[in-house]
Amino acid sequence: MTEYTVEFVGTGETISVSDKQTVLSRCIEEGIAQEYSCRVGMCLACSAEIVEGEVEQPVAVARGLTEEEAERYALTCMARPASDLKLDRGKYPPSIEGDAEGGPETASADD
Image (cartoon, rainbow, N blue to C red):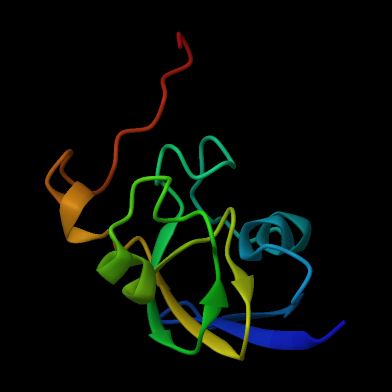
């Protein structure tokens, strides 16, 4: 198992994440406020722009990202680091950015 450093741009937050763990699960363990709703890549709320580094997220394209977007954006609920990373949270792929001002819609408590 390999550990990688994940830095969140503009927040001063840095965590260590193993290559066997998702970025989101580690954020939750560390108490970092990473947005998410579903944990399976369907809502896209956990999107982050990949500023530096690489992730493994084999089903991201099937979950709503284009192939090009999957190279530039991580769905943190399924992305596992493949190198040290710099992620910019709250950045959404162009295909969903216009769906709702400020990012993707998340499920309401009534859903």
